[in-house]
Length: 462
Image (cartoon, rainbow, N blue to C red; front, side, top):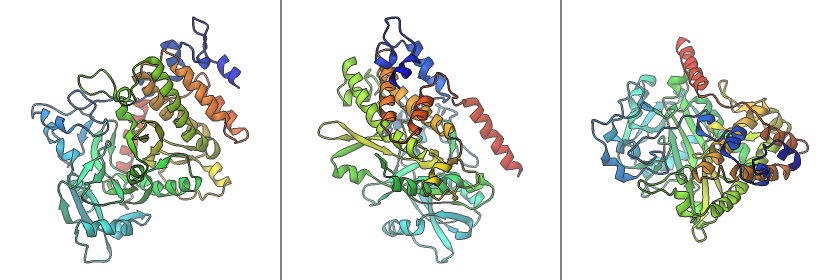
């Protein structure tokens, strides 16, 4: 299999093959794995004053560096009637105010024990419960209220709280302040265009979160998870209205990490550098000063990541949307060694329907507009290639300047090793053949945007 794999890899001018870890020219690496960001089908935007606004937690020192004359990039636009976010108002996004509203239960759909899980937090925050037992309490961003009133005319505010939460890197996910004990993080609808999408939460995302958690719990994968235990969204047939009020409750794995004397780090933040510093955070944290040190560290990292991702893909047909923001790396505080990974955001997971059905799982729970379950196995494999190899590993190789130093050859070697070790009859051979083929379909950014617009127009027409 390795020999066949190497035959497909173009020979360099020195005679070394990428599969052997030799010197791979950038042209070959990009043709074989599409490593450049331009080929990934995704546009990357930066917002801020030099450093990446979306890297880990944005620097609080940046808050005061904007003026009213500065205009936000169009990738950060609010959906009317929500007010536009001005640059000097970013603090209201990073430390948002939270509203607790009561909604008639018939106006929402619940998944999991939402009311039960939220009740202790409401009591701790002294949020008054509605007098009518037919109403449910849902937290939301105060900024989102104009759209909530428009979509849910019977919504009533119970309490608004300032300075009680910090936004995570995705902005629409929040963590309550340390003085407010909570085992959960909250992912809530925010009708602002952040990078490529409007950050509301669709009903089909709500439908699949708890089901995906249940399935992965049974499979016991080799990574931790932000388990999504409960969720709620609007019950309207118009999904845009239903998406304006939604909340997903995630279990927080940080206490578990602290018990293990580990830190959890958003991987995307590690490939960014601070203003005035030529080194990326990854090089500084792990003391990677030479190409040899970077190559060795990246090989060990890739081996661990592939051991986490490919077994469930090969055996069960489950693809994680494993880009740099959805995975966090667990690092030992004493040795700075990589101990493992934490996965979050089940909205982008894909699952092979017939494979799960054959292994006794219920597969009759998907929302009519959902896409988590599919019969197209190659579509599932393609997502893993795009998010894990192209976006995740590819961006790290680029940031460490390893693309022309045997980086892609190392990735191929670790891919072959990880997949061939999986005991899944012919499944591993087929998966490896697909992952190492010379050409494959890739995401098309323009087509994705056009499809979003077409779906929106179709939904408004109905």
